[in-house]
Length: 276
Image 1 (cartoon, rainbow, N blue to C red):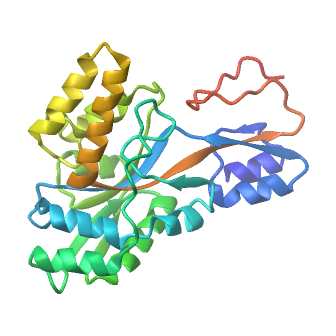
Image 2: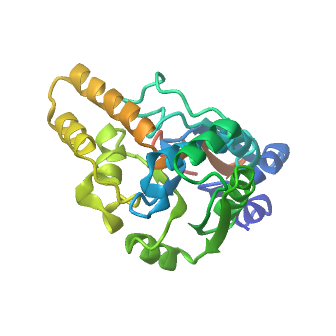
């Protein structure tokens, strides 16, 4: 609806164009599409307090069972990149030394068998909105290939947050945007044990080493040492696997061709005071 309004001339600027609409905007001479890598990450999280997901091998198996490139190609139509880590690639402290889990269904089946689920299991995933519902359907189809049956529960935004904050979920899909461009904003709220539920740690993970690395990095005044702590944290989270990082998407802004004065802000906090 936003994109239609832009193309019809009813609005001059659309802050966020859905990737599925980007090609139409690009093909229309009356409008322009402005894009840049975002500071966000899209991910599927797992509640590590639930019996099945308490086993690290299960969480790793799910990472192996998901074809992340398929999400980039289908959900965001190539307008982004596979997320290799738990921090967005635009954030200082991100490392390219962590390798995304490869798509390997056979390895996933091996890990599930080792964990005591040779025939898989059933679980639920909580989502909101059309885009994430499509992602959930892809997850459902891909996990079915390794014997995991996924039931999709779609909620209105407020109801979803209430359920997630209460820890009722097993799996969920969300995104996280870091507009401060400091790695602490991508780690403390999301993984520290003091932030279970509403404050951000929806995997409900509690891990002493994670807590210590986050605290040490926040207090470290030597920037080089600080970046090394975040690198170590990313390797540890990759192995612990409370999430399946899916992709880093692009920010896409649509504007009327005659709108002047707009510039993209790298954190998507675009300033509108100079428009004419």
